[in-house]
Amino acid sequence: MVHSIKDLIVALICVAMLNVAAANAQTATAQDLPVTGGKLTSTQTSFQQPGSTSLSVEQSPLKLGSTSTEADQVPAHIQEMPEFKTTVVYLGTLPLLSVSGGESAPLERASIISSKVNQLQWDHTPGSDIRVRFDGKHYAIVAGKDQELLTIDQGVRISTSQALSEKATALQIANRLRRHFGNAPELGDSDQPSSSLAAQPAANFLDALGGTVVHAFQGLASWYGNTFLNRRTSSGAVLRQDSLLAAHRALPFGTLIRVTNLSNGKQVTVKVLDRGPFVSGRVLDLSPRAAQVLGMISAGVARVKVEVLR
Image 1: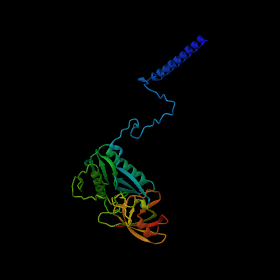
Image 2 (image 1 turned 60 degrees about the vertical axis):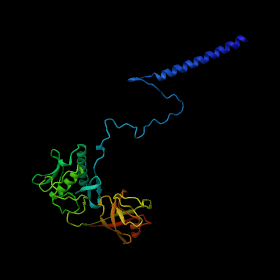
Image 3 (image 1 turned 90 degrees about the vertical axis):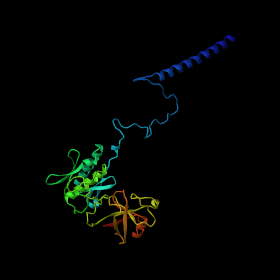
């Protein structure tokens, strides 16, 4: 009996030692798995569900071959304006030019111009390399070694009216580009750096020099929710309870517009001081006070006539 108990204890001790040896062997196998360029130094040994291995935005690597540079921040972009039957090319937050024409040509042409302008930044082209060229028939804007950005014709304007000549239009656009890319001196009539031509810095593409444009269009208008009160608009103006202001996608800040609610005939004159609306099918966002005057608070949206007054 004594021998049997001793034999049992010895057997249990042997089994325990064998289990420890097996566990050590398994750990060594897991830790010494061969991998390309060396050995795997650690593995997940817990039987619990492993935590997420996804990286945060800051930790995640860039795509192969990509780098995060200033070139990722493109200066030019486009905005379709169906109410004007045109497409506007923006340089930063300001309009650079507008393109009009047939059904699809304005959008395609504006996209090409925008991509060429962005290429200037990627190539680190200085503003002083941007100039106007005349081939005896048309004016064109070129950069660097005669890289043509666009040719000026009846489809390219800095305003919805065509009061400017092609030469004046070319100089205006070139000088806006020169200011943006390094604040280079402005070009004058002789196509040499000069301060004689005072191009409009705010780029009012609706108005020609020395002229007044009255333009009208229709569409759906909405209004700001009260949650936006006491916040700054894109122009820097604060939206107050009694503010008579509006948001439009492209009209220059400070533009006066008269808005008529077509369902009841009520009118209000407001100033464009914000950007928007960014909902498809809407042409204007109005402050709460302006919406109240127009009688559209309860409806939320209204079909309106917009008259540009300059």
